[in-house]
Amino acid sequence: MAKLLRNPETLEKAKAEIEQTIGKGKPIEETDIPQLPYLQAIVKESMRLHPPAPLLLPRTVETDVEVYGYNVPQGAQVLVNAWAIGRDPSVWENPSSFMPERFLDLDVDVRGRDFELIPFGAGWRICSGLSLAIRVVPLMLGSLINSFDWKLEGGIKPEELDMDDEFGLTLQKAQPLRVVPFPV
Ligand code: HEM
Image 1 (cartoon, rainbow, N blue to C red):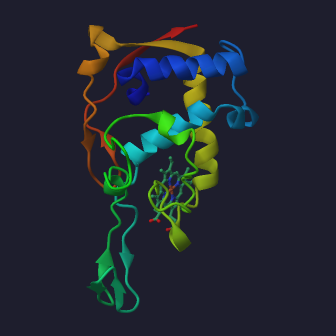
Image 2: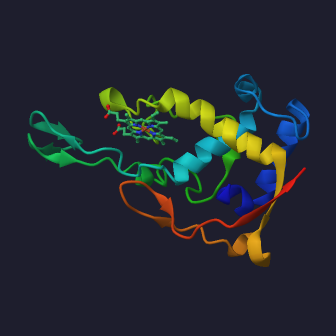
Image 3: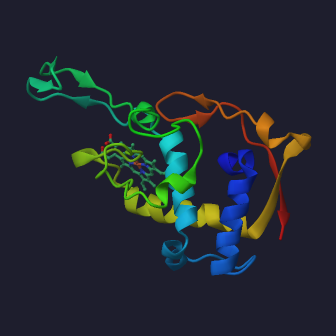
């Protein structure tokens, strides 16, 4: 929601997609999500820039291994920086720009298959709530977009909205998002 209020033209495009596909103000069902590629692209782009678990979960190396010329000894604790991977300029064009459009023609998924986008981790210990989350997050976001018009509180302009992250085991928005909903 913060990304959309910071980028009103993206919010308008998402709204238009939902209105054309489902109808203004109508409730969205889980089965509608595959028909909403732009909404899904917004979720991917938000997770690329702000992965909720920025360092995934720590791993311990079982045996000595060499990775790209680096020796990683048995017993070492390894943290995978999904936040940095999502902003790597050698992988992503204009990495810090919020551009959901980049995913419309890009076959990159969040299910742990494409290592450039791993908000749910990958491998044996991949998030076990992934199937639930990838259904619920677009459903929730789409419902918020289609049920209300949104305004930033206190006359704040979109470009003034603070988008800093606060780092920890999970990633939080440094400043809370304050918005006023208006029923459509
Ligand atoms: C947008 C929502 C979510 C995100 C981005 C997310 C992300 C993650 C990440 C990054 C990990 C660590 C994976 C790794 O280190 O490779 C993880 C683990 C886990 N997640 Fe999620 N998660 C989400 C929602 C959920 C939900 C809804 C549930 C449960 C209903 C859940 C349950 C778990 C569990 C149990 C683990 C530990 C798995 C293990 O260590 O074997 N997550 N999640």
